Amino acid sequence: MDNVLSVAFCHRELGTIEAEGSTRMCTGAFCFLYFWQYITKNERNVIHMSLLEIEGLTHSFGENLLYKNAGFSLNRGEHIGVVGQNGTGKSTLIKICTEQIMPDAGRVVWQPNISVGYLDQYAEIEKNTKMQSFLKSAFSRLYQLEREMTMAYERAAMGDIDMEYLSLAAKHQEQLEIHDFYSIDTQIEQVAKGMGLSAIGLDRPIDKMSGGQRAKVILAKLLLEKPDVLLLDEPTNFLDKEHITWLSDYLSGLDNAFMVVSHDCVFLEKIANRICDIDNDSITKYYGTYSEFLRKKTLLREDYVRQYSAQQKEIKKTEEFIRKNIAGRKSKMARGRRKQLERMEKMEALDQKEITPYFHFQKVSFTNTEHLLVKGLSVGYYYPVLSKIDFVIKGGQKVVITGFNGVGKSTLLKTLVGQIPCMHGHYKFSDQVTIGYFEQDLIWEDTSRTPIQIVSDSYPDMVMKKVRKVLALCGISSKHAMQPVGTLSGGEQAKVKICLLTLKPCNFLILDEPTNHLDIQAKDALKTALVEFAGTILLVSHEETFYREWADRVIDIEKQG
Image (spheres, rainbow, N blue to C red):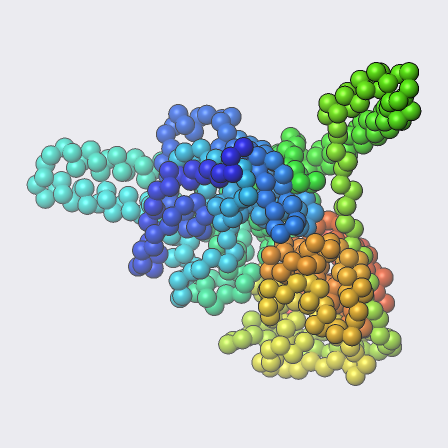
């Protein structure tokens, strides 16, 4: 296989996007602002045609091999869930598909004339752009058609009676109707409501929004663009339960194809009819739902282990025969067996390195008295996003804060830990409280530092052997422990942050969406650690399944503010 990446993105054409009076050029399918591509009716009627072919894909980060000669296809109508443990290369696969990362080897080939939409939560958006204008830019190509149609009618009315202009105007009119141009406002309202954006206000400038709100707006625009293929990386991270349900229903009803990276099993079960599992340096495509995938993978793995074990026994038996007879009367037979052994296609041992993290939070003693009093608290940056908040948490209580995304849950936690000042009211922790805080943003002072260096910097007296041990316990492999933290997956970075938290003795854990990037094994390990933690917990989470069994109390912040 040639070490070549071949990518066909929409014939590599340039698309023009107009937003807030400015015009931007978008090259390739990896920009978050995608232009419309028109496909003929006959092309759309080809149901089983492959949209994407990946062959011979090989890629590494340093010494960490992600894929070796891997491949799969994406066909029309397929809804693929991409799964695998943290660090196996799920997000990297999406970035390879969008040409953000060039693989070491392999071919990634898109069918010509295919529009691809990629969810880039960190995309640059022009300052002061209002949500409605940004969402309308999803239809920029249609607005351009409308302008061309109007100009054609005007030319015809000015005396250019040539039927050419009337014919052109009629053609544009037909295209606008086919693409539901006259229902744009309704479409925007439906998606905005479904994503919980209507409550924010369509006139809200995007640069005045929280990170979660901003991510939802970008996702909403992507859904409105209706590309032939959607590529989504952890789209539920910033969504609450209600809006995850809406997104599940929306995606499951799509005729177009998509690939979604997610660790949310319930979400995957609803939306996916195919599963791509990244495991043991390979990508395996399974047909069926997520639950069917789990069953099939278990059976296949068990069958492979049986075959591998049988082959190993046969190899051992043959090698023993050769050793005993190579110089004896049966030397000819032994040499024949050796040739057979050399020609044998040997099965590779399955990598049993599924890392199951173990988290344990060190406790500081406390009494069951009042640990936190919040009275008439208002929080925000330039203006209050939450006002008149009242609640009390006693020692040993496990409390969860819920509410729609963007209501101010993270702002409340940042206020409580002293990162931002409160605007009105007050809060008070007991003198006996020692706080341990997990911030959901994956921000590091220096992304070039490795997890080993980060832990060593925080605990300079800790010997290197202990540093490696605590990282390994938290699910960070030795290879990943020596990589720059900025090159690690979101899940691995989250594990590093949790590792730091486990090293700090505390009796009051304040956690802001700690499960956002974690795989199933890590989520289960974190849940166990929180159940076993004898101290007080204040958790912000949108995953009810994560906290439902152990939370003592749930505070709906919408009803508080």
